[in-house]
Length: 595
Image (cartoon, rainbow, N blue to C red):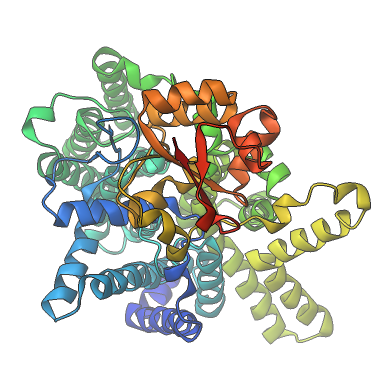
């Protein structure tokens, strides 16, 4: 970005953008409030938010800050979750503050479930607006605020009641990108960018690819340009410094030597500290005055990091889900690859993949005519990385959809400038078309329309259970089972977090890859014959079986194993060793007592 353009962007006050983001957030909150905050009463299958609230409750009830065990899910003894207390803490503080103001526990939790995602929503809109200005080098306030508000709204991760970690990760990753863009013109930006990268990594390993790319960008920028020395030094210090603080404040000293590949531990800390402090040290050396010297130094640092991983943490080079039964992974929606999402959920595919693909095409077309500017290059690296990750696991699309707003906003702003300079119906049509193809809602609507046309044929309507699928995620759905004496419950993994949150029971299964024993026991029971299931149920001391007839997971089990327990119960064939609870017949969740 040249000096004149940079001054233009800087002259556009961040306070104005913050006010615009606040207004956009207020509009969305008002819409939710008028409709009665429907997502608070119906979690819609958001298992992570339900389990997060359970974690916060456990923390407030006295469970150790360092203890992330979920004792009431899975086989006896539970399992250790891979999440971070960094997300639990602010939610718990909002609950405590609400209670201090006189609110009851239920009201305080409700307040936290509204305030926390709403705050993150507004801040993410603001960050994307600032990054869009940097990317375009011009005023793109209107398209960026509209596209970011709409994109984040349809991602659902900022809806009231959504308190899992994905919204936090998106905010921190987008902030790190935005700050790295601003580093040449604002000295503290590089340090803050490194801090945001370290925090998003500490929250969850899903962001490791983006953090790696941000760190690599800071290093490459310094290699090719001596003026980026402060950027590399600041990013490295921020990244390594916050990793050190998180390590000592969230992990008990007795576990400092334990490496966990899927959660922040000694492995991630060692890599972050070595790479971050190493980058800062190289940037601080006067001998790194030539491109060759800087390149050699960076290659040496990279070799040291690789050597440390190979020698001390070789187990973390394997697939993050190596050794986990594939049937367990099949039940985790966010871990599904693109091809499976395209086949089973075309609406989700259209809403999550089309706009990032268009944004990548726009950057590619720009590259054909000229070299990308610094800000455009950084955005392109993160956008392409997120898109590639999304092809492997749909969770990556959360980031690619957000990053796509930057080139899409610049594209719309450019056409608007052309329209102002030479108005015509053709330019006006281009503006309308650009707006439509840049909105996720447009493509989701196209997918729904196409699907409805295809399904009009009789042969595709034979089995329409999926058309009437329900999630069994409302508080009222669990009222009957909550009234029963505490026991272990056999249910699909989709019901696990709800049973945990709304009842005193122990759900055997839950959609978490670390709950290996409980999930495999559930799968073997539901897919096995009634006699096989009976053996597992006795072994795990199961007292109740819960069935949600509209649950797509249970329907899948029934199709995979027509003679299995799940299929038999869905067909109304109840084994003699089970007693149906007549009061739950026909309700969303039907209950069977083990005799």
